[in-house]
Length: 289
Image (cartoon, rainbow, N blue to C red):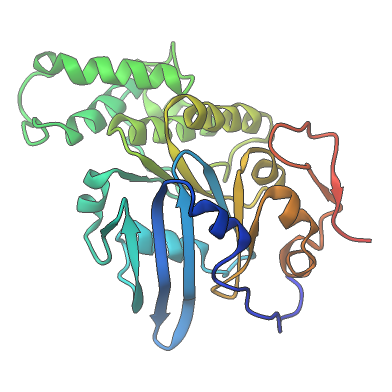
């Protein structure tokens, strides 16, 4: 990370203004979170447009995961509001926010390792249904949830591995399973926190393609935290850059790649990044002279 002293970015950015004409699925209004006097998130206001993939990037300690925790209800803000589909969800517990249609993944894979792929996803589907408390009934009574599980497993590219215990999957497939668990509850908004963390290099393209396909085919909105800039620049519609708990910049991948403040704060050590979604990895935009 480069030196500090950056001017605060305006909270209403050109990208955010353009989003006003589209359906806004999620908004944060002047969110702030303090930990014993340390400000982790400071006056953060963003808008996420329905159907888009909106990435949050920034150096370590920028406040990205804290922002996710505020949106998903794991933390309560010191100040500010979170609005989902025009409903104020500030301070609601995570299970209520999940039932409203927000699914959340974590940096550490969160699955049942001793259950099969099918069992993991079927239980997630049942948790959202009216039979979520019927723990001791035979699973054969819940065919509708099993059908949903088979559908989601195919969607994330795990067909043929339905009966494999989750612990035996490669890490990239475990990440796909985690996404399948989220999709089983049919959320409108997916919060994906570093989905490629720990994934082998050769597995990343398939995982990225899975995320892209989910967004394009499943009417999903995705809010993504990710450190791998080639991934971010390839699949994102809008990128918000955080630095020291605040919004530093927001815009399209090309705009972010050309932003000098972003280069100094985060991207300065990289020679190139892809030019934007849909471009090949062989082309890039210079980020530093």
